[in-house]
Length: 345
Image (cartoon, helix red, strand yellow):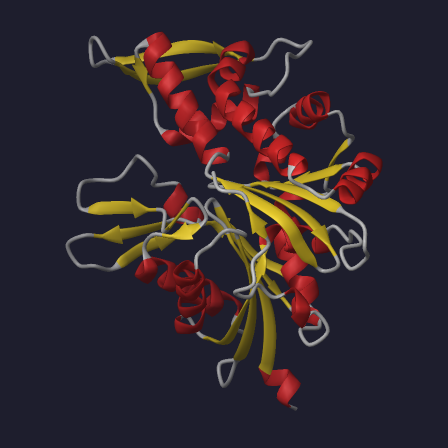
């Protein structure tokens, strides 16, 4: 009887998107981590997909907020409200709900940052919150053999952070998290268009450019996209055509930082585990793994096979879901104060 009322859930609280998994039901929510608030009344106007449509299009009294920045909660109350909104959406039993939540977090969070994630989840309606590092969750979601004494290298390129970890025996041996990921690519594109074309564009347009014509390596096909923005000279609207070579140039420095971080983690890894990585390859996931040719770029630079995890956007939440299905059995995976060797940025 208690199991009917009790639900265990998995949460991927991402900078760009938040996903929820319910035990025995699968992924039930996948929405942008964005909220719109009315500054006059303090009321929340929209959350998730509806709020994303308002990005860069609101009047002065409505603010569109991203409550998570670089994988860390920057607006505690808004994160709490966003989670509460998502939990209400999945609450099909009005009488009683006992949520035990498994939450994916970046590997380098401080104790204070971890506590803020726990508090936000509990205040939103969960009874207990268990934290698991995102690369570990992604590896579990991809059904990789993380419990064995062999190395599994996961690179999770999300919206706010790129998390890199070498996993063996149910834990991270060595990890690194850097604040260069999808949002940084968008910033690079906005800056490039401003400097090169003297045209101001917003983040949604930069995101569209990245998805439509962005690539990490030179492409045989020629891609281009017309975009519109505000001319910096006249202040009037103007349209330009942007080519894939220009977007590649815009994000090349950020891509170089990610590749260098992967090399640095491998350099600090014990030799036996490096042998495993050479044999088994690197697994990449997250929204950034969908950038054309990023796997080929990493493979060429690191000289190790690179595999994109199947359905890379949901790898972390699928991993938290695997744990939520059997929390007692996977309790050794929960992030504790004992941290792996963390390479400072």
